[in-house]
Amino acid sequence: MKKTVLSCIQPTGEMHYGNYLGAVKNWVDLQEKYDCFYGVVDYHAITMPYKTKKLREDTWSLIFNLLAVGVKAENLFIQSLVPEHAELGWIFNNFASYGRVQKMTQFKDKSRDSTTKSKDNFISVGLFDYPVLQAADILIYKADYVPVGKDQDQHLELTREIASRFNNQVGKEYFVMPETLHTESPKILSPADPTRKMSKSAGEKHYISVFAEEARIRKQIRSAVTDTGEESDDMSAGLVNLFTLLKGAGADGVHDSLMKDYQNGDLKYVNLKDATADALVAMSNGFREKRAELLADKKEIKYKIKQSSRAIRERAQQTLKEVKDLTGLMNV
Ligand code: TRP
Image (tube, rainbow, N blue to C red; front, top):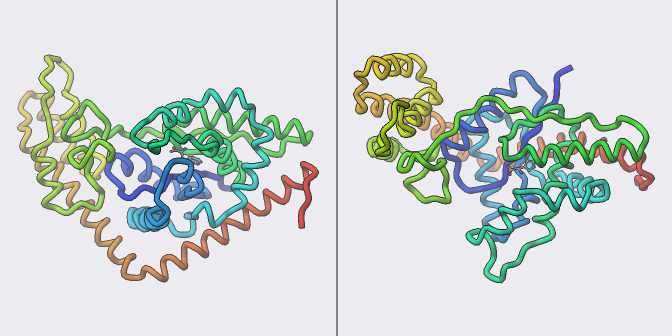
């Protein structure tokens, strides 16, 4: 039997090469070997101030983006179409230690972050409870592996604590302990400032959309910072980033030959930049075409995702039914 993989992502408007090479590409590759569940988690997205109309738009837009880069429709679901996540989340609230949840650094960071907080300093109970819902996302499919970044280790630890307290309560090893899957994923930096991560929040210059047009990609790569001024024998962060992008875009051969140039001390930066731009342009053109195709069938694709969410929901309902039987709650 295939092992089960689950991961989730919050709906945000755009997808850049940092998101893609750092996480989503991995999701795509894992589909070959595992039984995969990938969720767009809108219940999580409402834990912070948000705009109602934009939430739904962003949710669909992320779905189309994920499909365009190779996530299979049958593996995708929208969290609010599987409301059992929220019900299991409520049950798990009673198996999660308050003191433990209080220690979560993502909550501390988010509740402190003035750029995302509402003007009246409102912090919701939902934001505090977020990791318990995350535990429900994972355990409701009895996931063996959860591909996430290191920043999620604490949430996974909490998930295992909830699972084992639950198992203790019901007197059997009902939930298996999920493990994080830290696959080697490159860290992509901002082309304009390679001392920071590629990110949308830092502004236009600091990220390259995976659906960007050729002219924009060429301009951003041409002006990418290669020297940060520090004297060092190591390759500069900006050069490392270009090499990483080049390899990430699948141009292994060119990557290796330019790396040889670098080691021999005769790499021309313009050659590296041209090669990187060529590779990214080719990749983005493919993604853009695919997305345009999908958007031309918008209605059908949305229907398909509702269907896949419904099929996935049946798995979730089965778990919830067992959980309610085990805990003394009622099933209809
Ligand atoms: N908290 C995750 C993040 O910030 C998103 C997420 C929600 C998630 N539920 C999940 C990730 C379940 C893995 C599994 O990226």
